[in-house]
Length: 115
Length: 236
Image (tube, rainbow over the protein chains, first blue to last red):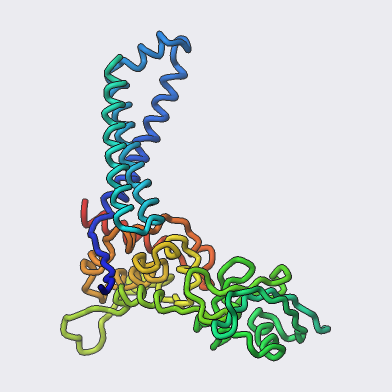
């Protein structure tokens, strides 16, 4: 069979943009958390629990986790696209990455709302 | 001024004779008038006429003598011989198939260049005189049209090394933006559609080796950024 090359998937812009947006979200969250942690009355478990059980911190932390996972999805997929040539192996790696990241998102939610 | 000797370590490969490539140590006596690396290569050719390389205009216009000089892509005709650490390490442009010695097969490079339709597409009836541009519109093409297609940029780009068949590469993308930026061109949307692809455009990870090596001091990364900006502006 003649091997034909196909390009033109017509996506890429959204992921490229999402990578920039998620990076900004993570940067803002990092600054927010550093400020909150430094202004804790004491560096102990009780103070940490008070901080992490606040609904805004939960919301922001969950948003951070989602941003991280979307960012990681684009980045890890780029690595597979660059270095893994066999189509079937690449597809399996894409799906495994995606499933792992969706699983992590659920895990983060349970951890955050356990408090 | 007296004559001086220059030491070389040159990548040699003749597929008819050599089982695999090897590095050859060779030195050459230069005349006082020899200033550029290409001058030394011309002298070298008179010592060993089997050494093969491309060259033509010998003044940085044709882009034929692009090679990897001491680990960095550049044009032999624009590189001062005295600025180079010896022995001067000469290799063919990385990432393209070697035909012989310093000569590479540029087919893949030009295939990508042609894939962006490097010409003005305008189906409107031609005006009586010419398709005019304002000075500002013309200004936008500066830094884009000067590319000589030497392939120094694309062959220094890791993304092009990994996916030369799918990623257009910095030279092709610079040319793509040259026609997107041209107010006389009417195919902007088709051009953006042609590039909106995870491989064709978005393999660029802003490594900027292209900017570092361009012998004409052009900035493909900036042009790629402008293409992305235009894509965002038509989506958002």
